[in-house]
Length: 109
Image (cartoon, rainbow, N blue to C red; front, side, top):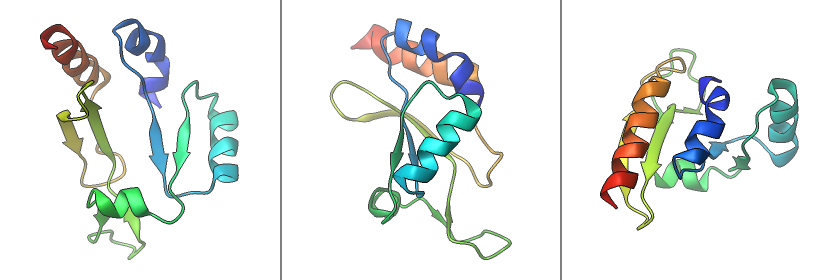
């Protein structure tokens, strides 16, 4: 995960990184350990958050019910300041895009 490499930079810029997964807490913990991820992965096993944000991918070629890869930068006011919604699992924003959007909202808030 590219963002894991720049996690200290995200924190230095005043941000926090959280992942949301449709997996269980136990499976997420295993993923964190295997990949040495420094940030929390929140379990959304009942998919309430994923469904609430409209992130289920109906176009998955294998007909699996999986979420789109989504990245949000959320301001201190709780509003989405920047978003990237991927159309397939490898469609993710660059680290530079995420850091730039984070710094932009921090400088404007």
